Image 1 (cartoon, rainbow, N blue to C red):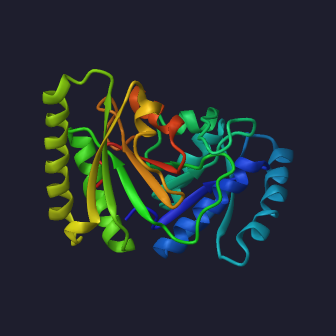
Image 2: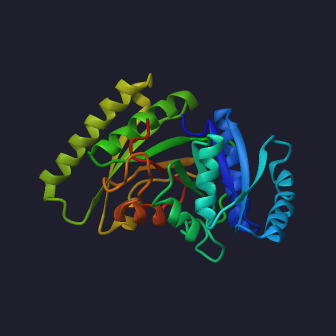
Image 3: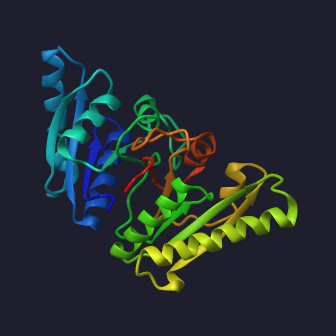
Length: 271
């Protein structure tokens, strides 16, 4: 399941602290292993020492929760985190939003942008100023009828079963989707996705729901449905993604930027 080994990328700012907080909360839910890493440029001994000093701040953030604290060399933060995740067997990389962005929204900095277009592990981003709730309330999957989204539904259903939380499927109906007939086709797709979720995990039927989010643009459509603070949103990678890599499409990127809860992006073929 996603979250069996979580790697948080730590930098000395609000986004870094929020990444550690979110990763810690995910591990508390899954019972998995937590690693926290700081990446430094190659061939600079002083930078490696500074990275180790930076990691000394992390135990205070974890309040006694065990974690592996790691220093990783990399030509970029994203490359270093990806290499490290592969080496230690992490299945989820968590990063925060850069400082200076809109509070409560996800900002995509250079590291996150690279991860969202090349990572081999699932990537989770925390909104700016995010404080994880004590418990997870629901997992939502952003759904469009295609194989990658079906994979996401299966994985999310299995996670919802293990974590004993409801599962919701949301499809965006942005602008003109073909009138009533187009909206009805989207609802039919959601009905099939509900059946896929129920067939993939032992979830009560009342714990799997679906909503059509309608609006003039992506942000408007997301505002059409509720987003509690204890929600996690799951998105699939684009059809353009290479096998077993993350590649976030244009619409999904707009969803991520408009979301008010943490967003997880799965690599293509995440099985």
